Image 1 (spheres, rainbow, N blue to C red):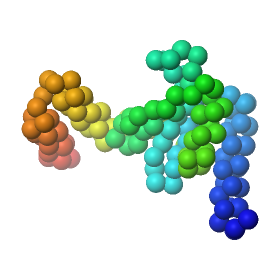
Image 2: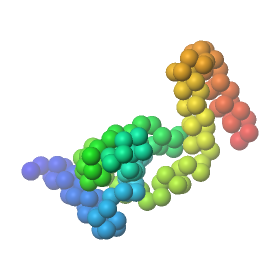
Image 3: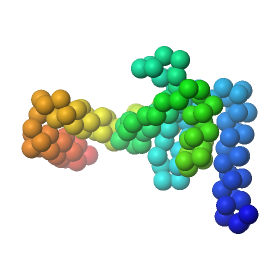
Image 4: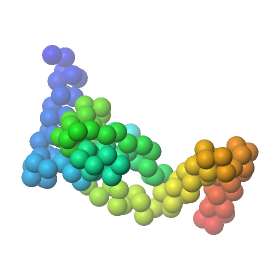
Length: 138
């Protein structure tokens, strides 16, 4: 096995072991991150009862999710795809920052565009105004 591949495997296994130990074998609530500061948390899936999700986020808010049959599958897939660093309280910390508030507001404008409530130009103008106002206030 190549040294870099072996190191990668060891890091993934260490993350898996730490998660199992820290959460007593129950990965619900585990928060992980990549080396490029992308985050995920393992949660019960509210839209598919009995399933679990990897909820993805960064400093600008939520960015998507993937659904699985078991929380163990979520954990294994996250680690396999590069979420190899534990990130305790990342969601709680990031969601209190100004960048999160701005990102969530910008997403609301994108949603309004997707629902046909704003034109593309109106959406861009609203997002630009949002960030301009934040810069002036800073």
